[in-house]
Image (cartoon, rainbow, N blue to C red):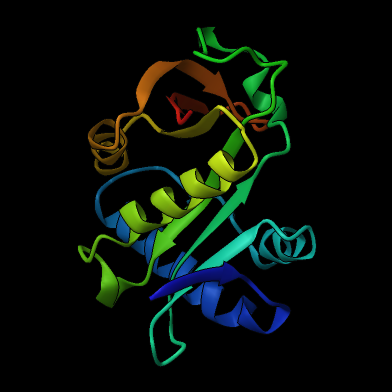
Length: 170
């Protein structure tokens, strides 16, 4: 198993994983990703900016996907709470993490977080920030297990409330 940058030809497989994740969230009565986001255009933008990643197995089958960047997240400028690392410093951001249905519970999310932490350490970037829906207790539980600290509430650019977490990695 390895992580790599996504390619344009991966879009259809990435979208299958995202659609499965949307269905899973809906089945859990979590109103996250139920408004047409993320969509193909967003994934394509992520790929073109080299911010989309996939985890592949030995057969090169895509098992999981995530967006990861060290560019600032505009919606993180205003938080009802406090970040550990000042917003003016460079930090990592994760969005749109999803695992293919048949590979859930294999530790792929933990694997991706670990790989992204390593990338930040190589660049001497101090922290990784992420937000999730207030009802997405599965992601919140994983974040706490991985040492992330709840920092407060942010609002997306479409005014959706999200719980914000951060981990200092250096």
